[in-house]
Length: 245
Image (cartoon, rainbow, N blue to C red; front, side):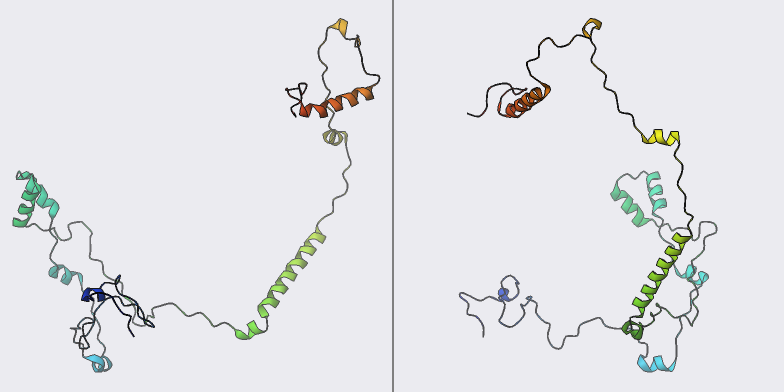
């Protein structure tokens, strides 16, 4: 059952994926058309090797080409460097002139111009060589079911613990080292002495002229009350007016 459409249905609607509406229970079409039931996809094989019967009856081997046969059959490459050099000597400047000069003149590279050069020959592989990687051995299922790997791990851990305990027992025990004056001085740290403020010699033994507190306890209590009250006052020292209205 197809959904109803409003308007003219054009063929381009079936080729544009943006205009194709998905059908119920089917995948959305890509808008591609098939070439027919008689069309054969793929490339045409032009090699006539005889088929299966030829492969079963004999075994063909490919002979490696020699350096002499390859050198005679292959034509040397075109020497563009020499052609460009000759073109500059002839007075050619533009790229079009050089292109025409290379089209009308031909110069090839000298075969094996460098001393000691040779044609690389592929390595000879023995006929009984097997390519690929070796398969891994199968996992022993019986050892997995019997938890052999866990038992081996526990035995290894227990052996390590026993070896560690034996090593600790065989370690020599050091006795107590007698303390000396040098070690005691290193451990003890003298308290830093506070340096008093400098005063004139005639004022060093003079006491305070005025003391409004009855005892040191009253002085300490008054200063603690002032410190707690300075939080709500203005000023850097907390001695101004109250900030709370």
